Image (cartoon, rainbow, N blue to C red):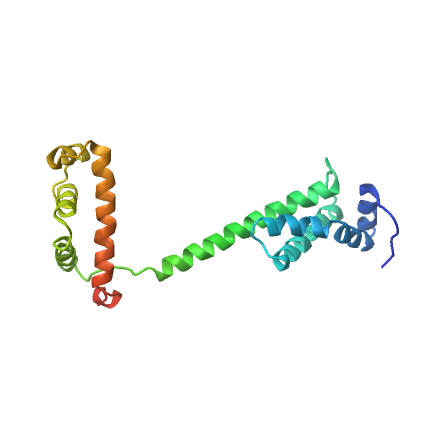
Length: 188
C-alpha cells in the first residue's frame, strides 16, 4: 500500500481508489473517522457500531467508484456523511423492529379455547370493575351505544369525556384480566 503525505483532493482520492490504491480509502478513514463516530454516537449509537457503519460506508463509496457510478455533486466528506446517516437510520429501524418483535413475543396472548369461555372471563372481570366503568363498557361493547349517548346517559360533559373514560376503563379491564388469568388458562 502506498503511503500518503499531506492533503489529498477529492479527485486524487477517487483516482487512487480507481487504480486499486488502498491509500485513498485509508486517507478517508483517518480523516473522517472521528466525525462519523461523533454523528452516530450523538444519535444513540456506540463507537463500535459507528466503526462498522463507517466501514460499510467506505465500502459503498469504493463500490461506486470502482463501478464508475459515482457522480460527485458535493465533497466526498459530505457524500460519506450522508451514506453513514442513511446506514445508521436503517440500523436504528432494524433495532426498533427487533425490539418491537421481542415485545410482541413477550405479550401474553389471551385466546380462550371457545367464545363462551372468553365471554365468561370478560364478564367475571367486568363485574369486578367499578360501576361507571362497567356501565360504559357494557353500553359501548354490548349495547353498541355511541359515545354521545353514553355521555348523556351517564351525565358526562361530552362525548370526548366519555371516550377518555372508556379508554381508561378498557385498560383497567385488560389489566384485571391479565392479573387474574395466566396464559395457560387460555391454552388448550
